[in-house]
Image (cartoon, rainbow, N blue to C red; front, side, top):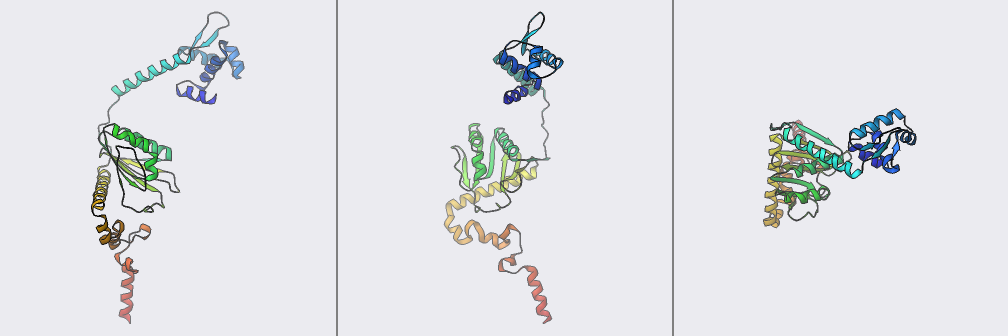
Length: 291
């Protein structure tokens, strides 16, 4: 019964109006006194709720004393509410001011449900292209939303980290990162919708899911360039994988280690790869001079 009351309230009825409707649907024609007695609510409040229901066309009343009330069939109530909602939606769409201005603010989302639902919503709104970089867990969670994107006539490219079988029509390629790359602080994901809206976030760590949305051109360009580089590297590995790995190491590790220490993903001077930092070399040189 509580679920019915909840959904009736979602349709615009107050808590007491929903309870009165439920009583009338269950017991048939009733007086206000009988309804108040059954609900354990004051008669004045019940009569007020019944009057509102009558104004909304949800109940009909009899003439004479005492007044009897009867619920209109729920199918009729539903059809009327649906027609009113559709009319309101059409009016708002036609008359609501359009936001044509470029939005460069950053908007934050927190919580698994909010983050995932917002991503699904933005994917539905895509008109030309969606570029996604996802871990396999997020790719599978968004599988149905991703399936619908190509059906909208939108180009969809998904770079996945880890194994994830996506629906037909999704252009998928594996990211060249090792499975454990930066996973300790949560799985990072990015989406770029129509080269206009950037979404960056994390899921799966110790903290709640977090995401940031923006149309700032710097962030949009950053995600686009990053995604394009991934595609180039993917094609190179497909064509010359063995040669590239032999010369540059798996996932170009030799190149990366040439400029930064990979351990802990914290940038380090090149000398750290040899077991000595630049600072350590400088200190050692000073000691030699003293000797």
